[in-house]
Length: 162
Image 1 (tube, rainbow, N blue to C red):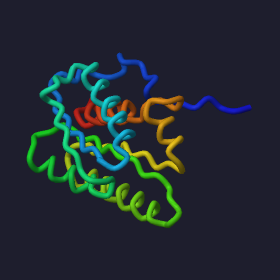
Image 2 (cartoon, rainbow, N blue to C red):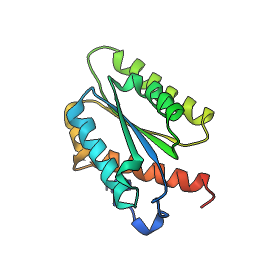
Image 3 (cartoon, one colour):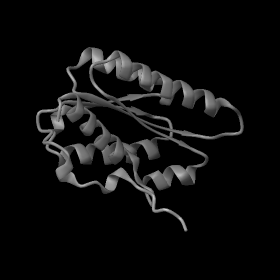
């Protein structure tokens, strides 16, 4: 018997505090943009649903997932933010390039979390193929951009002692 997969995008909205005063940065990879655009839409719509004003969502684009940590670092240095969501999509190819990019991206984002006083959220798909990516960008597996936004709001609340 298979276990039902849990997606954060089926959360209970009352579990999150009001976010109307938060300022959130989102750094988005341009690589696989039809996927990352869908993830960005999921994250943005979720933030807006929780009361964040549109002008308090700062979106910046970087060439690929490898550049997400650097983009997040620059965004944190230039804006007063409560959290940052890093959105990307890395798809397995025929070489080990996937492994190096995925590991470097995850390590870079984790390093920022340990250095910064605000949460930096890893919302990067690491998929075997395009179908898996599409399923996680609004398909049958939900929208992982929504999950990134929820994680960000929960971590901000955690940081604020809520």
